[in-house]
Length: 200
Image (cartoon, rainbow, N blue to C red):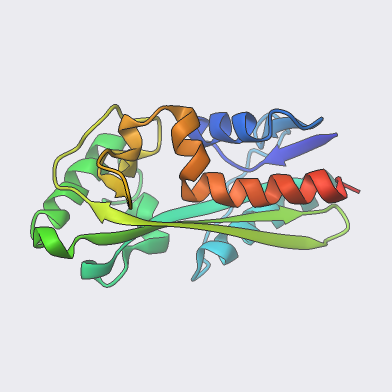
């Protein structure tokens, strides 16, 4: 069975393949499936954006499709960047530019007020238009000093310290991060659903 993952983010694709690796499913990217058009993510929530992308790919290919939308919400900044996480530093900003902008915004927040939350919504769409959404959350705090190596297209990992830890996501191994991250939690729910129900 093939599952189209609507992402052009190689970091996310690698995570997805690792998480679903023991299922009898071939995970392919949207571009590998011939879905080359960009879709406008104009939803007001992570779930809405994920559904927009998954529906688009399922309709284009008549196959099962999954998409996610994730972001960091910083309490002291009224939930910014939220659904604008990828565009917070401007449209098309590089990982380095996003990190630099984030650090500038975080540096103004008192150390004891840096609570933040990472959220992922994963949408699964069937060729017959059925749809499901699975969500994952993790609480933590942000730091104004980047720590760890930047994973491709996952810039906020260097500034986010999950609750109960003293290291950032970027300082963790892929396995450790996947076991507790917001994306890992949401994809685990997806995996449990597929294991129980299959893709039919």
